[in-house]
Image 1 (tube, rainbow, N blue to C red):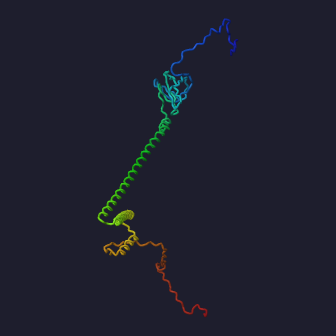
Image 2 (tube, rainbow, N blue to C red):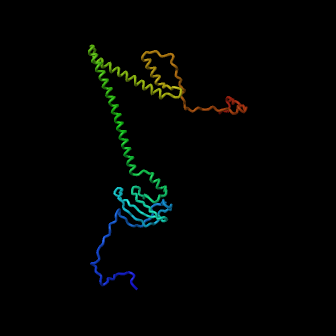
Image 3 (cartoon, helix red, strand yellow):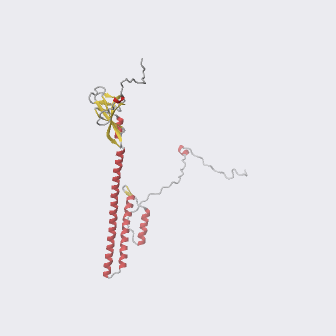
Length: 285
């Protein structure tokens, strides 16, 4: 009986090792392939016969290294055959989404978690969105800067026009023989009067907006008193047709003592009056 595990080999007497030549076969054309044992990475349906192949089923597949790259990551393609009709099915790796992509021969079944994951924003999409928002923000800031510059230019132009007008008025006064200082003082007085009129108009507008309550206007008594005092000081007579301002009584929170009701009188009971006799109850008695 021969040995099960042969450690030595038989060499015939006419064996000549020099006659053994090293032979090299033709190189494989195309991408490099190797046979591997794998499990189906996802459930799929064959497009030829309609056979369902569930996730995790084992196959003897051919593994192929493609020329595609994703950030220097190699992408592999796998070839398997349908268990019913032996049709070829191919799928490859998808490092971008950390998944597999079915190419041909089968259709991937619907997976709810995968749809939700694909609907989420990826890192590249998030970076693109942030870049777009940054660009829009820069445009808005540029527009705001242009608006501020235009407003500043308008203010500068108004100030220059005012200075030119004042200089022209002074020159005209000098030609007419008037004092330039008096003209400047008159201009300042006019400006102060215009400014005061504007402030009074804005104050009146704010007062009427704040004091408007429904259909009635509630006036402040202190403002009315101040106006009256100013009119008396100026010596102007008061207007007789001015309507009187009705003021509401000031509420008080003083405790009021209630009078006690005479319940005996209500029931018809008459109380006898107490008559004091002089000398009764004294120490002499």
